[in-house]
Amino acid sequence: MKILWWSLAAALILAGLITVWLPIPTGVPLLALGMIIIVGTNRSAARMLRSRRRKTPPLNVAITWVEDRSPLRFARILKRTRPRKK
Image (cartoon, rainbow, N blue to C red; front, side, top):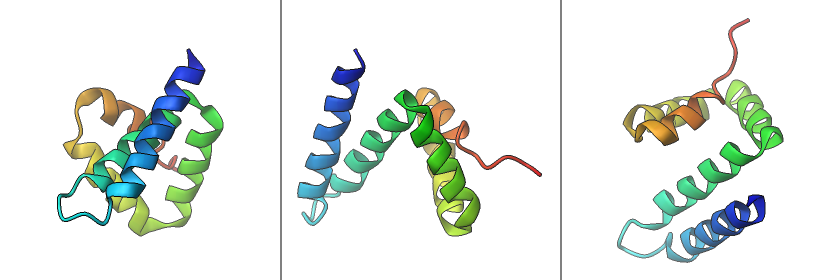
């Protein structure tokens, strides 16, 4: 089952990279959806994203913005990558 999810994520990321320069804004949502699938299925990817969010405040703000506007399933996955309070 994990291979299926990773294949889907790879296909979404590839399609996002191909369509990111088109006038119709489909590339960025496809890239984000592929990232959400990878983070949702891989703990080390979630840890890496949490670390990156901690070190890069503008990225954290952008992902928090996406969390607030995403459907509950996707928002729950992204909220797990929030930097922990010290």
